[in-house]
Length: 342
Image (cartoon, rainbow, N blue to C red; front, side, top):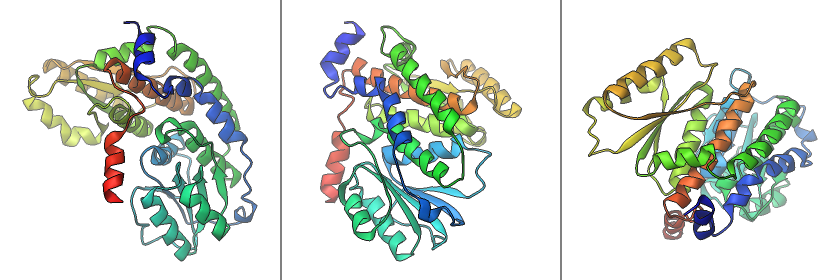
């Protein structure tokens, strides 16, 4: 079968088109009118970004995107509880695409009790209702998508909040990223494109993803997208930390026990020692007869390169799903977990 035949057969909710038109999410988020005038004079001691899954990855990505620039501590909270240091000087951003994520609701309730400064990113739900009753500013985003397919909405809404508060200025980069995603959407929706080729190469294998520095969240995003979209186990770690522990696990590697390929995310602006670490790691893995795939971006701007590989990762996981005969929309085990918890 041709790739389009796989898409027609397995992509029941047309995520192909959602991905292709992701650049429109960037425009929608960036052009969204939000009023944060009452917060512009505040001096925040820290920022907490609360979310789970597809709503949380924006926070990780944000840290990498503005790495070396942020002068305010920024932490991602994936759970039910805010850290003890959260108080009235803390800016707490609650991100829940559905508005019904129970962990995020718990953090929202605590933030209200702590009298923290709060901003919400959501399409509605219970969190939307709580925001209205407590007069909390809401960045309302388009509904009807699955959270992991709405990264353009969630990430660029977060970036817009930060710009509105005068913490960063990203207008030019956002325009470049929007244009790049539009161009890549055309490329990756064509036959036998780069994303299809990489997806084909990992079929039948368990991907191990290694990245470093400002690509840590990109590597983790690829891992999570392979999990949710492709219904595939995948694992991620970062260098140099991986060189101090996980690297030893490869000493006893046996292909029949662990059928794997390694994917390395590399970049020209990595620390020189990290570049050397990737070279040495490839040599070690080659000795163990482990195939290594390398992903990188040639874009001039580091921030644009991050978003370039993020978008490629999403397409790889989509194609890996349909090529393996799975629906990239289905998340049955997540639904079962939520139902049992309720």
